[in-house]
Image (cartoon, rainbow, N blue to C red; front, side, top):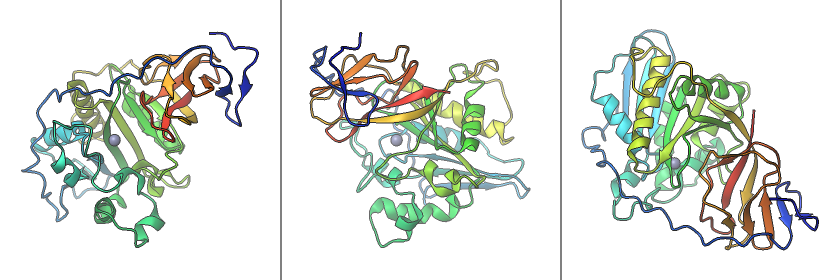
Length: 345
Ligand SMILES: [Zn+2]
């Protein structure tokens, strides 16, 4: 679509234009209500853990090497990662060097999960993936999730390489998200490259509402050495997201010599990933924010100035060529993030 001559840049945003919008927004798509495609993992055998902390399974080689952790159920309704961990735990795990921790994070939110209301129980009291800041952890702030963060911190504070497993509400390409520290980009690229359908690697500054586990200073401080990335394995409760979670979990263990590098379905040594950096976080200013079509996360819009959404009297247009749409929320509430825009590196 062309850029109309009467459009006026709205505030500092390079993507928002105040105008009489050229297009009428379509009706909002219904919330996805996909039924779970595979049974909920039974965590009964694993909930106690094996090292004195609920949900934490720890394996020592007693030889030097990194401490690798794979975490699942940061969000109680995203159980693809828990499925992957139960698969790993049901085979003998003997790291040849270093240490391995497999961690079910928000067990309480998962225990409350009800397949008849699958969008609920992301958390019980507050989002556990916005709490990873030292001064908050040391403060008197309390909630079920905060108590769990404090319980897990002694383990997290010794982790060298961390993969946090998540899924998404709306359809999207698979993503590996990292904080801005360059070492995390290298970690994510090494994990993505070689997968037959490599996840897109996206660097971002995190959420204004609080740091994620991958933003915790141990993993994101410029001078640090510990690395972390977050896998968004696909849409919640789909078989493909469960497969992607297990593939990436096995892949990271194989990369660090903790599993044999076996021929696995889903691998292709010559495949390489697209890397992108988030430049803008598009907030819905009005309750009528609507995308002009149901974009799929990870789509790359070639032409700068392409209209992607209408927000009241504003048009949202891509600010540069080859703009990636990261996790579009097709029904954003006012004041919430509708999409993040990322530039291909
Ligand atoms: Zn999540």
